[in-house]
Image (cartoon, rainbow over all chains, first blue to last red; front, side, top):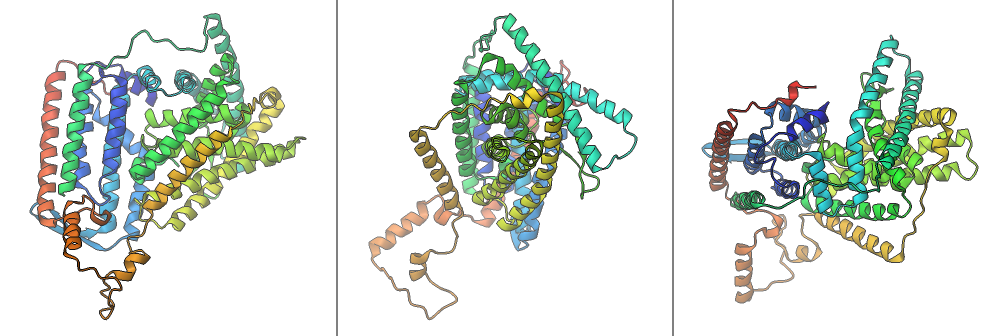
Length: 256
Length: 338
């Protein structure tokens, strides 16, 4: 399961893992904002932005095979929309790249820019979640004044995700074992409805059991953490480097 | 329907993020007034249920070889009420973004609005309206299908609007809108049928689940209404400003040079040297003259070349440093596990 793999990666130890979750979260937001603000027909600047997530992934010991597989999984919608630019701008645009000069369609340039920006920002997001434990991320969100109810909801959701996805897997396996042919749309939807209904019923029963056991352990609607979040020297260095990096690339963008 | 960062401009992405964040804070505050600790675990499990239910796929009619799955916003609203339902759906969208990278981090605002907040409230409103005070089996089914179709369509319509306001895509607005509406009409209808099938199952097996719906009816103060309208106006105003045409406006048109009409004499001419020198200074200093970036193609080409080569070398250096640090400890190859 993907989230189990993310958990495994986030549980490693590295300089990136030891950073405060708030630093990484705000850094990722800021970085993403700068990347998408690059001009829509620029290629070189978004490529240069890739240095930062590359550094995060390398220093955070995140496997590139994992990153590429994840990028491929989530890319179809963006790829289709990026490719659609080809149909609407076929005007030849001169491109100068050092000693090389050539002409391409404006739509191709724009589509390529979208794809590169997508890969760069998604790599940064993968870098964030693969180097930060989900509980730390939640604590960071809480410290950034995201409503407590919502943070707790995210925590519960993540905790029970494993349980219910496993249960859904068993139900699907049972359907696969019993169904030997296509049953027709009406029957298929009815079967899916019954399966989801059964899953829902058992989920509600699970919720009741969980509530009872939580109340028995004195749950009062608050989640407590053993470690205090602290903004340290490493966070200051990371933030400083990111600001300098973004400023340099902003200058580069203006020069181009 | 998950929007990516790259399809949005920074003002639209941040504006919608602020709007969705503000909306979520408001919903959470309202929900805290009537929520009990026992509902907290239920909400968490229901969020996990949506993930699990999305694994149950079924073949789509008219589109052979494709399969669909439940989205779950309307079903959650029916079971938990719109306030708790939207919080649960929002948590699902946030988790999809953070853990599964479905949709960008900066596009989270758009995705929350399109897939959680709007569908939950719109879907629930339509469902209750059709169901009325005397719910029958047929009414419940009609209400379920209609609510799903309308809720999904509203969310789908918002996607091209946000993309058009951002101005990143070249796809004409009406083409994108038509595609989104057409595709989501089928998806919404199927979603409606599955939701109805689930409701039918629950009606027979667990009638308490759909009967025990905590609507929670917090009221909006007038101050909140005014603030919401102000935020909405600012968001729409900012977006519409970005849709501005690059052609001259009426005033500019009256004095601008017209290459296609050589005989045209500008109505307004100002030959004052002070004004001319200020204009020249402004043109030199402005970072974005007329909202475009200044460029000298040959020099820019070499700068791009140097920047890309430099970035490549930097990456190689980072990789070497990383390799030197970790060479004694093996990297966990997560793609080979699970």
